[in-house]
Length: 503
Image (cartoon, rainbow, N blue to C red):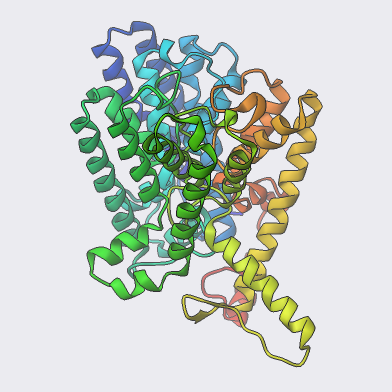
């Protein structure tokens, strides 16, 4: 493990976090929030005190392989959350650091689960920072770095391993050959779509500050509300704009690039996109029919169903009405959508539509093989054959995903709450959705959980956002063993033809 490279990388990212806190001080100055300005100032000082020495570490061995990529990504998100929680702590709005950590992890992972009972009582500077952590975490902190900065020098493999470790979905697809250029394209699309959403909100007469925060949390499909009733008190126009925004940001960003270069053939060829649209439309139709009697007009029922389906499936977590009071059929549909999530390569969480598709295709292949043992069955996606290694990786991911879900439910059950609350609290954190059902319903918060459960749920949020492996690898004992006999390892890799160091 090349710990010096990782330490310098984390140090530079912490320095960036300190810089990104500066606008919050400006917001505090505009709204005359002296205590908040001081809390951000102290936080920036402490972050730089730790980050600068690490960022200035001299590097002799620049080797950076897949396991360094996983460790760097996992450690980066952990440290960003730990230090990003300091403004909440020093301002006194959340006097317990574990609550501050939970809130910040929920922000960076775009989960939206909160321990704050009255968000409207927060200083505007902290509301801004809370929302901005979601926007920054939406496309990925390290993807942002790859797009606009250089972490280390002269190491092209580093970018590839970082991008692979932080990317969502089955595999990290490239739009262009150079990874830094690829990251820049994705983030440019992210910024442009965010700007369009911001302008559309202003047309709905939403204040500049509210529009900025809603843009941050919608684009990231994060869902941190700025009002006690989330989006319920906003106009119908605003709700429709946000619903469309949540839907678009949960689509694979590669589709937008293909749209720009007019490669419509590949867009129409995407099975994941087609299945995602079908699931959304079918869910809206079924829920609308089920809840129609609860609303005065059909248009209100359609809007409520559309908003909630796009919110839950995109894992944003906003609500325009208390869906925990809806009929059991509608609540069950929303519960199932929590597991599915959005498309790979989007800001949405969940298991991703493409993985669910591949699991079903793999199961179908297994059944067919059992019926006809001598037949040859291959798995295809978008008209192309899926490699056996990819299929095995997806199946392995889902097994580990299920194990973590079960283990999380077991630990959280120590609180003694009802089964619906216990299960949905873990499900919503692992899939980065935000609200659950029962005591963690859309109008509730996570403040009543024990500190132990909050730590468990925080780790689960990180595992869900980074899609399991970076956090698991980070805590693996094997990751911290010193390099031994480096020359022998190099010879072995060369003999095996491992140019990228993936073995």
